[in-house]
Image 1 (spheres, helix red, strand yellow):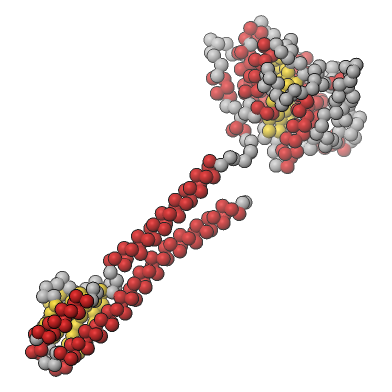
Image 2: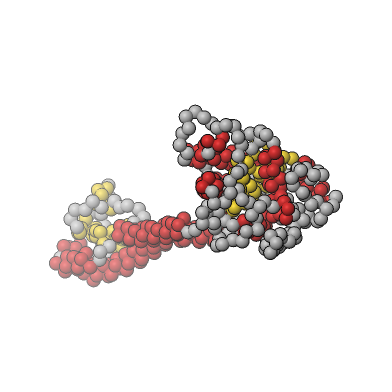
Length: 434
């Protein structure tokens, strides 16, 4: 698991907790400050009252009224102030009417909300009592604390949304899954309807034991005496000579005679200008790289080799055939020319069963496109498949298996698709017996 998203999630939780605790801390501080200011204001008001109000008649004097009015205007927290005599009769009240006043049996008292206000009282001379009501937590203090926390929280959400948008627009890692392959329904829907005619495409599964038996096919010579271990040599070992012959490749599974005609043609650029397929000289190197990558990620890989009989490179029909094969699969850089009338496609992260289904859809599309060739029952297009299937194999071996399956499909009268299904246990036993 990557640590980046986990670290961001932990930091986000800590920031959210801090944002939630911030207004609580501010409100508690405002409450303490309100209580402290209320005590200080009441102490000053009581000292003034002790100097002026010596007897009940002084409660209505001009001097006390002036001092009480000044304290009222000076102190924003002061809600009400009352002077009572020893019997509880009200001698002075400011303001004259207030929603905080409450009539009780013992005279006038305060009706106040708990927590946000405080009632303070003290005695003066001659039994006179001074009572005052102060607000300790104002609505403004609560509002600003909650508002600031909400603004910070909204900013945090905006930052997270922006980060997610950046990640969603970033180039994703190349992780090929089956869903990235062309949708068979879309591939079939791209061809025009041909009344009610649907090509019948037989297929056949080639078991591994038949491939490793002696001389499985007459037209393919399989060199099984040499060591079939993977050869980590990505460069093609075939070079054209003056007489048109070539040296035998280092790989032991196939020989030069097994390769189709035109294999040794040198590439001119990365892709063929007419078909858009990659040059066959790059097939072995690219397949070796994809096999190593699939083995490192414990993924499967299939190789598809298809041929169009009686066509050659440069023909109009072959160019249309090659372009259709190239556009059918998602990765155009994994489709290569193969021989004079064929194409090879590397299908990463795809097992042989999935490759069979894709091959059937491809063959249906090609059959509809070249209906004139298939109307008389001829089978000009064939497909051979092989897959890694959990084995550590080199490119030459899997190419040889796909070529063997393709040759078998050509020789059989009915099957147009043959897939070689390797068995990892039999394969390891075969290697152990060499």
